[in-house]
Image (cartoon, rainbow, N blue to C red; front, top):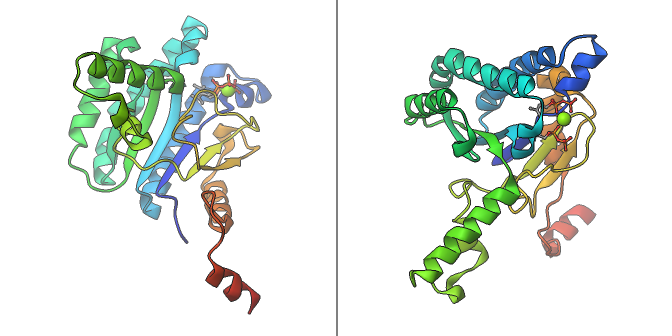
Amino acid sequence: MQLPRHLAIIMDGNGRWAEQHGKSRSHGHIKGTRVAKKIIQKCARLGLQNLTLYAFSTENWLRPKSEVTILMKLLKKYLKKETANLIKENIRFETIGDRSQLPSDILETLEASQKATASCTGMRLVFALSYGSRQEITSAVRHIAQLIENRELKSSDISAEVFSSFLQTRTMPDPDLILRTSGEKRLSNFLLWQAAYSEFYFSNKLWPEFSEEDLLAVLQDFNLRERRFGQVRPVETHEQLNH
Ligand code: IPE
Ligand code: IPE
Ligand code: MG
């Protein structure tokens, strides 16, 4: 099976899952964290190279303070408990997003996990935290404008590749596949630029009920996609298909 070089997941539906089970939203997030742990391990064992998980958007700061606090607590707990496992699985942990918004204890935990896993050579695991694609693009534009003002860059030097190198995802390939759970069919400010030629998969499962089997089904479906990138299929492929 051909794996995507980069899988990005919008883990959505924790709140609805909790509601369906007569529980508080926090319970949904707790269950969602467990599922994330399982899926991360499965992806690493399958040999995936890059996995990005949308864990908290810039807009999620607008949720009730109590929910934001729970989400931050869960993140901290996950990293404190799981960093040893990440090392065992040879997973390198990183984040994208606006770190300046994050509380200092969370920042410390993130940096500790990042440092502890820095020499791992297996899957790269990226948490998009306090991440918003428009903010990422705006800050890249501001950085480029500054370099032009300082005459360190010429406007004619800017190409799509150069622009990409100013984004926080610069060291990763664009996502080949973006998966969103919970039946919502939108990006919600996630990887807008990087998704130019991504394949999309929208699962009706809520994130807390998403299983390893569901993941395999998504990856199998990806295998059947024919990606053309605006070009026509090579003639040989047509001929092969017709014989
Ligand atoms: C995803 O689940 C988790 C985060 C956005 C942090 P939600 O909390 O958005 O769950 P729903 O969409 O309300 O069901
Ligand atoms: C997107 O989910 C963000 C994450 C999964 C972290 P949301 O639940 O916040 O998105 P909307 O509000 O449904 O668009
Ligand atoms: Mg949601």
